[in-house]
Length: 359
Image (cartoon, rainbow, N blue to C red; front, side, top):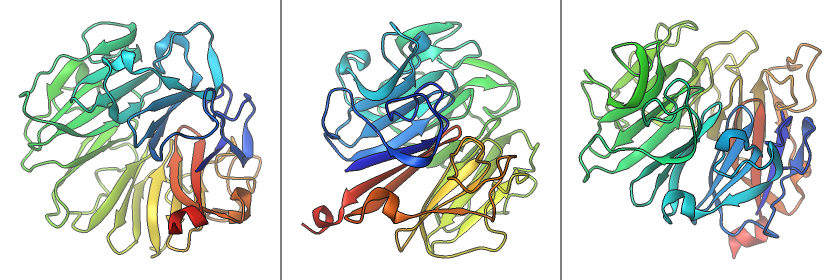
């Protein structure tokens, strides 16, 4: 398996061994391993740091590590290759979920504990009025027998979903993205007045999108309506398979492979004007999105000033056309794309040898 990154890289958040932006996919590097020790489960990338979570529960980071925001001691401001975060930071447990805020990170361990690290001037750490810390375990304010099944963070707030469908959040809630009252939430607070059991959540910059079981159509959008996130939302969402949020837009991928998007679109962040079928994955970054088709084609669209949408952009960071196709030859003839991710003007693609898939 190989991981590639392109886009904004001023703090080494792509993990490619330098701090230069790039519009062409570059191979990501590891500090203590020759190759990834386990398949990649997910990648979360924020302002200047990136988290890579493996299926094994191992967590790797690259980019800015100042203030402990990436879970590593900050003897230097940044690192340019992916380094493993030792499990001692999480009480010796493995990680099952992770998310990245602007200057902080959140992990959920397999023993159902939450750890936060970094800067929390607006409640991002969820541990009271603690502004900066390398690793803190959150106090559980919900029943111990309820497991955390989903986790999402925006620029300054975090939402978790419990196995009973309850939702808790913390951080900057001044736009109502954490429910009422609209305020900074210093410790996990239950989102009240939800009329359905939530199973999935995603966070934009100033909003949170909560969904019930597919087929029921239940949804709730909390927070700012600046880009008509609430006003232009569908009345229900029955056949969703995946959901993802940029800072100002929302994307849902249906069970039939169709992407539906609404929200901010001044840099064509929403992609094609007409619905298209054949997608298997879609992930949104800050102001761009990346999708994978049934044929293994990688498409990127939106604002791409830092190279996160590939090389075909104008001087304003806009694409020449609604999307860029990242050609398979960039990843080698013997490899197939199996995963995609996006962050703050960053894009990641990981591949696997075709022979390895068939063996």
